[in-house]
Amino acid sequence: MKKIIDLLTEEMARGFERAGYDPSLGKVTLSNRPDLCEYQCNGAMAAAKQYKKAPFVIAQQVADCIEGGGVFSEVQVVKPGFINLRIGSEFLADYLRRMEQEEHLGCENIGQDRTMVIDYGGPNVAKPLHVGHLRSAIIGESIKRVSRYMGYHVIGDVHLGDWGLQMGLIIEEVKERQPDLVYFDESYTGEYPQKAPFTISELEEIYPCASAKAKEDENFAKKAHDATVKLQQGNRGYRALWDHILNVSVSDLKRNYEALDVTFDLWKKESDAQPYIPEMVKAMKEGGYAYESQGALVVDVKEETDAKEVPPCIILKSDGATLYSTTDLATLVEREKLFHPDTVLYVVDKRQEMHFNQVFRCARKTGIVRPETRLIFLGFGTMNGKDGKPFKTREGGVMRLETLIQDITDAVYKKIMENRTVEEQDARETAKIVALSAIKYGDLSNQASKDYVFDVDRFTSFEGNTGPYILYTIVRIKSIQSRYSQLGNRKEPVLQSCASGCEKELQMELARVNEVLETACREMAPHKICQYIYDLANVLNKFYHETKIIAEEDEEKRAGYMGLIGLTRTVLETCIDLLGFRAPDRM
Image (tube, rainbow, N blue to C red; front, side, top):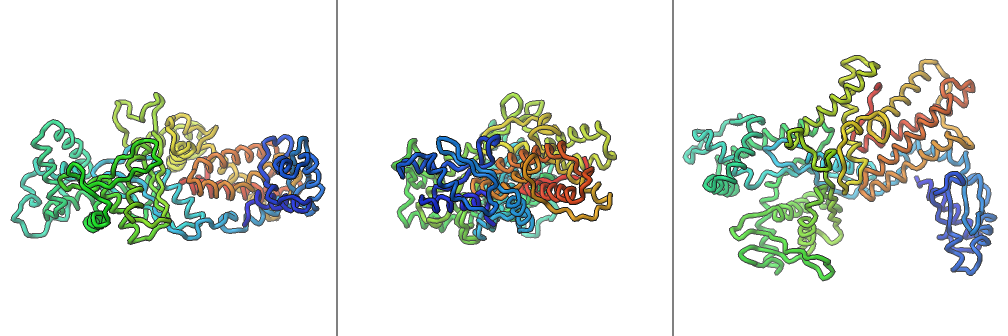
């Protein structure tokens, strides 16, 4: 189904063509003066120089050539040559009725089932999720949902960090605490215990303890390094202990991501790329791409057009150890082999831009990815506290994600109970739903690349540009629909045409949804959906306050109102689902 703006442009293009001018001049845009018109066309201004005529004359000729048919209810020429347009009420209503019947609200299938891998999440195992993991999860989840909705075959990968010095630190710390464990007995040949020798709470204490110890104790640091090497070389006991670390960590991570309503198709790990490294390195050497520099193996990735220096991409350290760049490149090898993706998107902290610039250039230069494969780095900004610094606990530490979620849930629960509109148990369930909207909308309503202030009081407000306000609007519609049903109305809700006022304003806002979703998908910009549903909610609430919906005596008109708010609910619920949250039945 074509976007309404495209249908209007086609109609204006025919007008220009009938008047003897280039039809491409008929582009229509939303009016920047809604007090004067709904849409506008400035093509006559551009045509003036090309055709050596006054723009007003051209505009008038075009206006005279716009044939009847109901697309426009008014075509007005304004000096020096603007064409002001008002959309036909029946044309608009018919468009919305068709949109309501179409799959995906009439959005075009721009994905065409092309494969997209989204790398988001990226936590390290053996550590709790904290607020620093929030943005990647929320932004990545929304882009995944939007892209699927628009026709892409999307594969979401959490891509866990499980292969590096952190593993050696944990293993060595466990060894010091429990040296008699069979994992450290080189002569042991039996089956290792199925139960892990630590809980998630103990594991989360072990890593920071070991990390701090390594900074002060050179001997411990060397032992941890040696343990890492033994693990990567396949030491049987260390591999078994590593499996325990993964199993315990992943179970906890899944529980935390579930609380965020974030899911992954793949729970791939850094270690999964290891088998691809030897062949990848060999190919880089044989292809003449990789060479030794100060003992390390590197690939030059600088380009003549670089405004600043881009260092070589290091493939192997002087001791033969791998780096993040090595595993990221090997992961691209794996993804190409398994999925043959058209796009690989990384939703990562923007401070990693140079790293991914090097990796992308190296992947292209060495033929790891096909020339047509899109490699995209979506760098996000920092989530800050009211002091403008990275969000911390009151004690100054990094806040655990589950603590943040609980704090927001408690704040919402308190507000709900102050109103006393629902029972306590219902209030607790509702608070969880509303809190998730506050967290996700508070994040996604900001452009991903920008830093933003996480303001609990503002984000949990039921007024203003917030998630709870959007949910309150949906719940209001649900309440009206429930009352309409209880009154036993016989008329089936069907959206009807209207000439003007807030009813038409609401219809026009609804007609923009497929354009907004397509733009948000192409630009990977969930914040544009947030802005749209905030505008839509405002127009709906204006319509609600200015219109007697249930009290309308004319059955036909009342059914039309119900059809209109029913479509509004569908659009709002579709959009919040794409953002990653849902609405309760009551608030």
